[in-house]
Amino acid sequence: MTNRQNKRVVITGLGAITPIGKNLADYWDGLLRGRNGVGAVTLFDASEHACQIAAEVKNFDPHEYLDKKDAKRMDRFAQFGVCASIQALADAKFEINELNADQVGVLIGTGVGGLRVMEEQNENLITKGPRKVSPFTIPMMIANMAAGLTAIHTGAKGPNSCTVTACAAGSHAIGDAFRLVQGGYAKAMICGGAEAAVTPLSFAGFCSAKALSTRNDSPENASRPFDRDRDGFVMGEGSGILLLEELEHALGRGAKIYAEIVGYGMTCDAYHMTSPVPGGQGAAKAIELALTDGDLSPNQVDYINAHGTSTQANDSNETKAIKKALGARANQIAVSSTKSMTGHLLGGSGGIEAVATVMAIANNRVPPTINLKNPDPDCDLDYVPNSSREQQVNVALTNSFGFGGHNVTLAFKKYS
Image 1 (cartoon, one colour):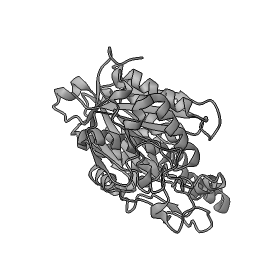
Image 2: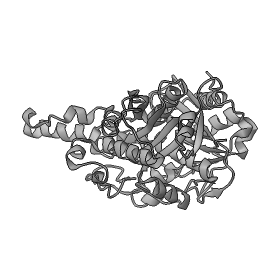
Image 3: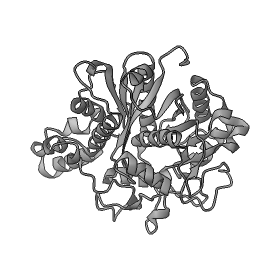
Image 4: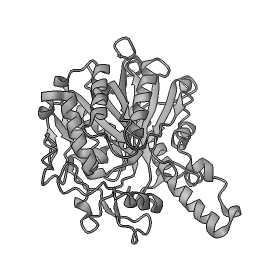
C-alpha cells in the first residue's frame, strides 16, 4: 500500500514524559546534551535483584495535569500516557470540541499495562484476602486504559485502540494511527506509547532471563548500545505522544508542522519468543517496506533512530538489518540509540523515539549514542558517538523490535 493516493499526514503536536525530561523542551535538551537518565532504583527495594538500576521518571507529579481523584484511579503507565497526550494537544494548540470530537482518535500502545497495580493488588489478595482487593484493580491494570482514559480526559470520540506488541507497541500505535488518518477515518490521532514497568516482578523476570545490565556500581555507563562491553538493557519508563493530523485540516487551522509521516513497515520474524532472527532479515524487510510506503529511496535517508537496546543480540542484528535494507548508503547515515540516555521504555520506547526522530528533522540536529567508547566490531555504522551533531535531516527512520518477533519502521520527512 502506498500513500500517494491517500491523504497526507503531518505531526503538529508532541508530548514527552521521560527519564531525562518531563516535557518536550527538557527531553529534547536532554537528548542533545547527552544527559544520562539512569540511576539506582527508587520505586521499590531492588536490593535482592541482580539489577538495581533503572531510568526512572523522577519527581513526576500527575496533579500538574489531573485532579487527585482521577490520578489515584490510574496506574502510573496510564498517568504517563494521559499527561503526555495533554502536553501534545497543548503543543499543537488543538482544541477538541463538540464539532470535531468524532474525528479525533486515540491509539496508545504499551507492553504490559498496569503491572504495578497488578502486583500491589495481588499482594493484598495474598496477605489480606480477596475483600481487600481494590474495585479499581481491573480498570487500572488493563493495557487499553492509557488510550481509554486519554479519550475521557480530552473528549476524543473517534477511533480508539491499544497496541500490545511488546517493545514495538508504541511504534505500531503510531503506524496504525497514521493509516487511520491517511485513509480518512479520522482528522487527527493522539498516538504513541506509555510504560511503567519498573516493578519487582518485571525486574525479577528480566533478571532471570539475564536481559538487564548489572552495572549497578556505574549506572551512568550501563546503557551502552553498540559498545562491545554492553551487558544488557536498562529499564526505562515514561510516555511519548504525537498528534497526527490530516494535512489540509492542519493547514486550515494554521497549525505549525514539525514533519510529515510518510511510511510504515511492519513484519514478523516468526522465529523465536525473545531472540531476533540471525541476520536481521525481518527487521530489514520492515525498513524496506517503510521506504516503499513513503516512496523513498535509501539515498534519501539522513538519520535512523535505532532500536539499539544495548543487548548483544539486538545491536549486531540491527546493524546487519540496516546494511541489508539500505546497502552502501548505510555507511553514510547517522544512526543513534537514544536508549543510551533514556533506557528502554519497552512499549513506551517507540513513542519517545518517534518524538526524538521528528525533532531531529525539525531542528536539523541528531541526538548522540552516549557511552559508546569501545565499538563492537560487528557494529560498524556511524552511531553519532557521545555528542549530538548538527546536520541536515530531511528524511529519518525509527526502528522498534519486540519479543514475539515484531518489527516496525516508521518513516518521516521534512514537510514541504
